[in-house]
Length: 123
Picture 1 (tube, rainbow, N blue to C red):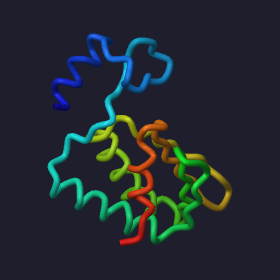
Picture 2: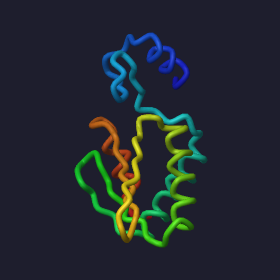
Picture 3: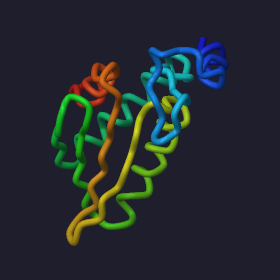
Picture 4: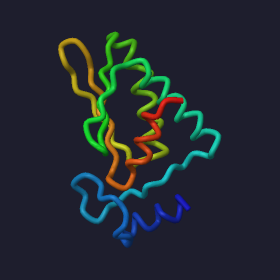
């Protein structure tokens, strides 16, 4: 299904897909390319990560995670965000540097808020 959706995206034919950045006509499906077991494992990683740092739900579609501990704490977060973006390209990640922390902002489109809910749900 993801491959079929990718063909639809490249053709720009499905209005139900999320527009990407400033690229009119280009959209990303709300879909994950991981198998069920890998998806559960990655979800577990997110939950463990979020349990380590102060997390604030900014809105239904946005989450802020205050990362402390300097560069060593950032490496696994960046790696996880990159893996998430690879399998679920509708996620948007950004890092904001502050004097005492780095804030990771995780955003999803309106029709993917339940996925963000899953990340923040305790195990």
